[in-house]
Amino acid sequence: MRILIAPDKFKGSLTAAEAAAAIAEGALRVYPDAVANQFPIADGGEGTLEAAVSAGYEERLNAVVGPILAPVGAAWAIRKKSDGGATAVIETAQASGLAQMEPTPANALRAHSYGCGQLIAAALDAGATEIVLGLGGSAMTDGGSGALRALGLKPLDAAGNVVPLGGGSLADVAALDISGLDPRLSAVSFRIAVDVQNPLYGATGAAHVFGGQKGADDEATEQLDAGLRNWASVLREATGRDVNVPGAGAAGGFPASFIAFTNARLEGGFALVAGLTGLAGQLDDADLVITGEGSLDSQSLTGKAPIALADAARERGIPVIVVAGRILVTPEDLAGHGVVAAAQLLDVASSPEDAVANAAKYLAWATSQVLEGA
Image (cartoon, rainbow, N blue to C red; front, side):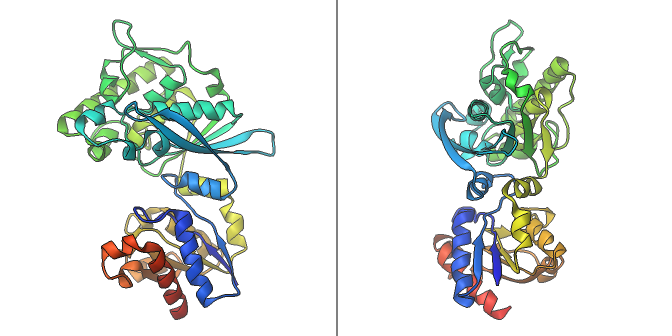
């Protein structure tokens, strides 16, 4: 038997690779002669870099400016292509992540994506001809302006001065100096993993929907939204492109600047990562798929990685087993996606806290239990 073990991360307890190892341990207890292929997956957010590295991309580390100016070490990855070019994978959370700052109203206004731009510059220096940007876990609401500033753009106020970094300053931008913008941006292909449809600004835009998670209070939210609205106007005047499109509100509006100044495409996260890592080929060789994530809920059913994987397996006639930290959907919901059995850690742990603290142990146990009963 060939088992494809392809979980997403168990947020707060296990990376996707750690989860895969625990599931494999449990599977081999029941089927000791099986070939258990561990293949971490992601849906374009946090974990995308890990999935790429697990699939053979070379991980690199750069010191960059963090979301509120303190330096951070940020990982990214690259792999050569057969045509002589290279694909780089960058996560916004690595350089400009919410985990790197305290979410307060002041920091929500100051946070920026400059470090992400530094990673893009590093990828270009390394010969990248294609750059995949995974969004998620970001601290900033700056419309991607900080990233472009690291690549040579100068946003100016009415007096001709460069405005400070951060979304809180975007309302003051009156013009753009693009004379120093890195010319390589026009030659590289940008693919941005986006699984939300929020526009850049407005009631369902980046500031109003996601700003609170980053520390913004009502006043800061209104200031950030006004800044994004003005940033869209300045970008449209400079490039002729409308950036207030569905998906542009992801990661604090990060896609907006790249929609304006590059040939960036917004793509569904799971399909994008699956194509990068060769997941289809792994599926073709599998007799059984085991997947999972920390919390399997109604949002998971809208195309998050484990359910998207289950759908792909179902199309090939491959049965799927799900093991998750907790499962908040019905067996009938899962069956509709080809899932034949499921288990949650909450059923074997003594408490939710115990499930998080000892997730690997319980994940192996739950996997063996569900396989024995399947």
